[in-house]
Length: 147
Image (cartoon, rainbow, N blue to C red):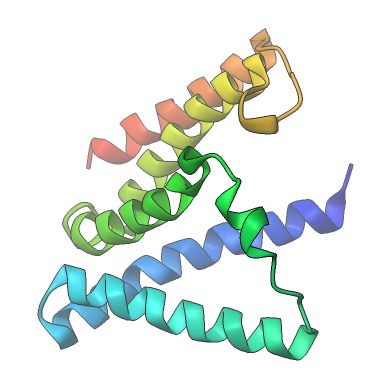
């Protein structure tokens, strides 16, 4: 298996739980979830721009950007939805429950994307093992919810 990539993905997942807590603290400090989300994206864009400049990442041609189908830009909207919902729902549900629910939702959607090869993913048919894996995550959500 791709141990390094899998380890990095797990660390990124851990950072998402930390991000929820940090963003909730920014919400308290700034007074509104939308302001906190804007601050999150502002810091993110500054960091990404700095990295792009340091790495000398070339800018795409305007024709390349404008020729893209409009629906592909919905990824940014979905990122804002995740950050905003984490700011609002994270403190209500707790980090564990919020993360468990988002992971369960991600896995169900991922099974569909993989099974049909949607959005450029290679086709990976749903099988019993994958269903059991998602079922175990959903069972974990149920266990966490019983508190």
